Each structure stands twice: as C-alpha cells, then as structure tokens.
Amino acid sequence: MFYIMETITKDYLKELIKEQRTDFERYVGAIIENFQDQLGGVAEMVAQNTVDISEIKEDIKDIKSDSKQMNIKVSHLEEIML
Image (cartoon, rainbow, N blue to C red; front, side, top):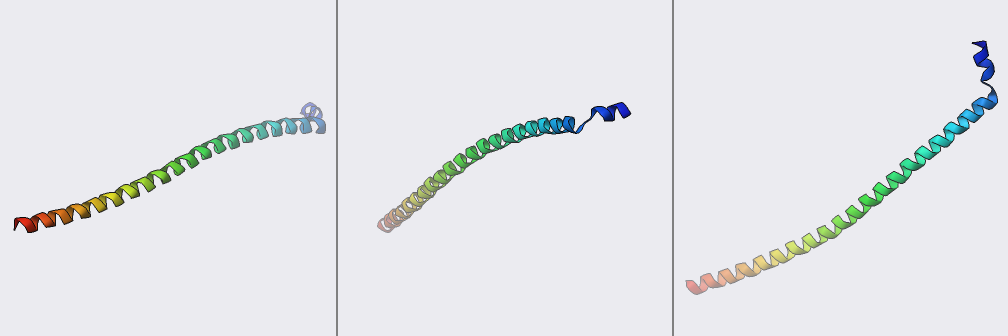
C-alpha cells in the first residue's frame, strides 16, 4: 500500500485532473451544442405553428362571414316562399 501512495504524486494528480477536466469540457460542449440545435428546431416549429394559427383564425373568420351571408340568403328565400 505504501508503494501505491508513493506513485501517486501531486504532479500525477494534477495531470489526471487536467485530463479529466478536458474530457468533461468536451462532453459538456457537445451537450450544449446538441441542446442549441434542438432548441433551434423547437423555435422553428413554434414560429410555423404561430403562422398556422394565424391562417386558421383567418379561415374561421371567413367561414363565419360566409355563414352569415348564407343565413341572410336562406332567410330571404324563406320570405319569398311564404
């Protein structure tokens, strides 16, 4: 056991920690890059959904308007037929 303790010097520990830190920084960098890519994809989907919702609102508005026009025409036809 004493032999193991002799071979683990401060310099060895510093080098080991430095290597581990480099590996950790690389790993975290890859995770960050992946997250940013995914976040960009989500932002694009939200933007497209916003456009789609606006178009759907316009379609509903048009349908309501058409429905009102049809009700007026039906009412007019009912008056004529009576």
